[in-house]
Length: 124
View: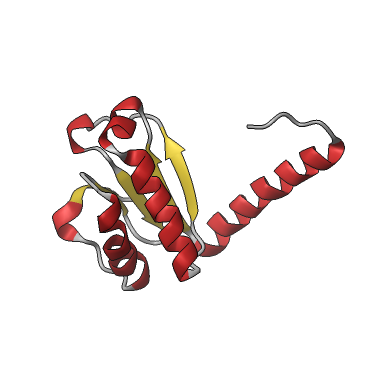
């Protein structure tokens, strides 16, 4: 995070954080990318950039965040997609070239890409 040098900088950071919260609440969509050292070594940074680019290209609003190690290092890069009213789905062994299909199927068509799923976590 850059150093805050003025009240305007602080206000800008606050607005960006509030915008992220609004997007998460309004869309109900959260994409979580595992960025522990194992994930980064497996290509998670490139996958995350591909996700951000694809969301931007398709004008899809979703809250994208990074976390540390998710715990299944052998299945990295790992990406969780969480949408209101649906189980959280964890996808594994993703590559940047897989991201457009994942976004198309999961976020646009509402279909889980079963062959890439490594786990699900329901609200109950």
